[in-house]
Length: 163
Image (tube, rainbow, N blue to C red; front, top):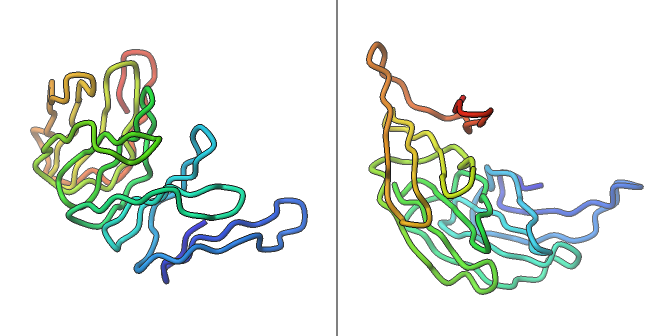
């Protein structure tokens, strides 16, 4: 778990004792994600970190142009991460190299939902966005015609519905 001073901590689930701590330079708002034996977490210091989940040692980190607010999602060997710079980035899980970036046009607080070749996320500029991550392009947007409000919660997908 991360905290408001920028520490990421791992606890032993059997006894609650701390196993390791990794320090970032700012608060951690998002939940860590473990994928393919790697722990991914973003921080408000503008970095996405990739750590060894057993030791807390750093594999790689990638700097963004704003705080990383959402939890990373995993898509076909890549990490999809968004934040307060209006971009979604697809990064290699192996080394953090950027495969693609897509301008969303607003800060993103929600964790992208992934279904096949589509990513879905809400933005703080009052839109929900559907992205074809394989083509690195926005395929549709939705804005509520009756009310203006930011989308902070992460979308859920059920059948052909995005909730």
